[in-house]
Amino acid sequence: MKEIVYYHNPRCAKSREGLKLLRENHIEPRIVEYMKAPLSSDELKLLLARLNLKPQDIIRKKEAIFREKFGQLDLNEEEWIQILAENPFLMERPIAVKGNKAVVGRPPEQLLKLI
Image (cartoon, rainbow, N blue to C red; front, side, top):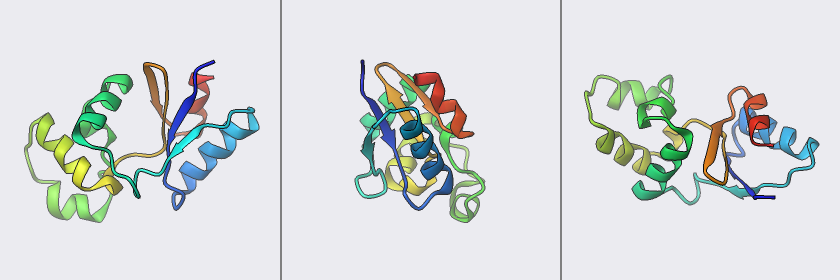
């Protein structure tokens, strides 16, 4: 069975809920605390490919910093990836990856698609 990699922010209630849900289903993922070790642009590109999403799809648009600094910008995908790499707190969470497939765990039950 392939390992699940879990992009986790322990300060986020939904991220904690998702981790609990995985563990209740006897899954112990490899946890990546992306706030402590931000993803590079290349890692983000790979993650987005597995999610089959664009960078704008995983940006937390309700964050004040997004609205203040980035909300009015018209950027291309490369530029949004760079913003995510430089501002990891803007990345939606949690995200789980198993092999070549990934899901955003909002709601946390979405994570069950990987089991």
